Each structure stands twice: as C-alpha cells, then as structure tokens.
Image 1 (tube, rainbow, N blue to C red):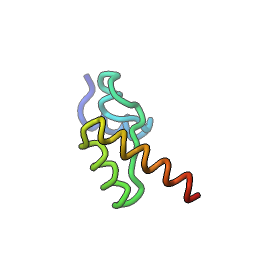
Image 2: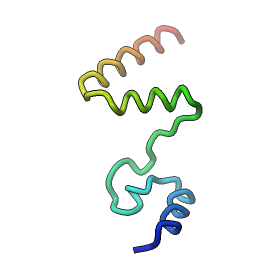
Image 3: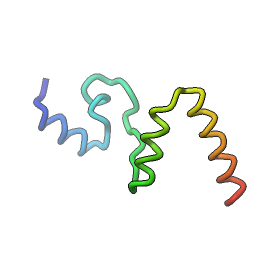
Image 4: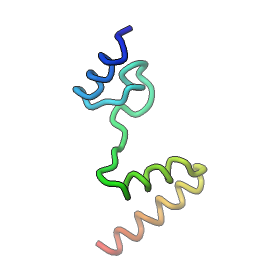
Length: 68
C-alpha cells in the first residue's frame, strides 16, 4: 500500500476522498464547504440523527425554492 503522502497527493490530484481512494468506500467526491458558514452547516447536518437531517433538508429546499 502506498504511504500517507502518496495517498494524500493522489487524493488531491484526482479530487477524491482518501477513504474512497484507499478502499473504495464512501462518496468519492464528498461535499466541500466554500466558506465557514457552509462548513458549519455541513458539520451540523452530518451530526444530526438521520430523520432530523432529512426534515431540515426538506425545509431548506422548500424555502430556497420559494425565495429564489
């Protein structure tokens, strides 16, 4: 197996996650935040129970469609 530095370089070069590169699991291209607020939203969403996360996602999608 390649070393840590090689895996990190390949991950960056191909734009895929280390998990996916190392063992083919997970999302090959996970969502990345472009600013601090998006990072906080991703962190909060990923740490909610699945049913709550789904409810918040539907609410946000509904509001964003109405406001756009």
